[in-house]
Image 1 (tube, rainbow, N blue to C red):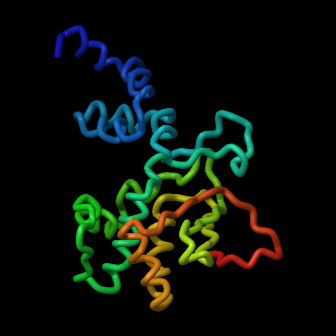
Image 2: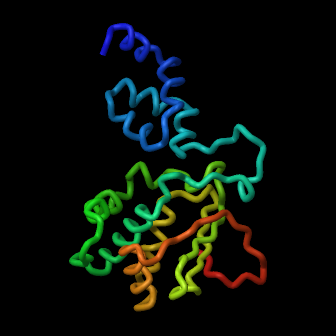
Image 3: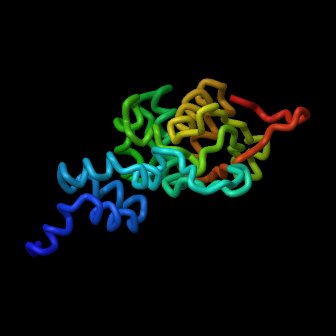
Length: 200
């Protein structure tokens, strides 16, 4: 790295501006470059909002109408959550052909202090969301998940872990999720009085 580039990166305000343009996955990787970068990201409200760790209050908008889903909430993340839940029932569980990346993440999922658990599921934060399985074989698979302080990624994992204890139908649903036969959608929601979906 040239000395001029090093000087730029040493200036906190400039580094903050540069890092603010990174995609979420790149920003998460950037905090591992060195201690200085880690501290800049950790102490920047703007970057913490970009990492979905702090609520974005910059715009006056309704979370239920304009919330942006955390880009890390992908089918692969849901696969990991379902696989982890199944492993809580049977540590020896495996699936032929399952993505190796998914199989090697159980340690991170088991860590109650893992940073990703505190990442907001939506920005701005949403307290209630509808989690629905997109499969004709599980058309009754819709559930409300709730966190009065704003839904976090950890809430999704905890939902799957609790779901694993609901019996054979739930285990089949989780198995289908882990093998990508079922995709889950998540969206902000309000809960009408007459709605009978499961609320957790």
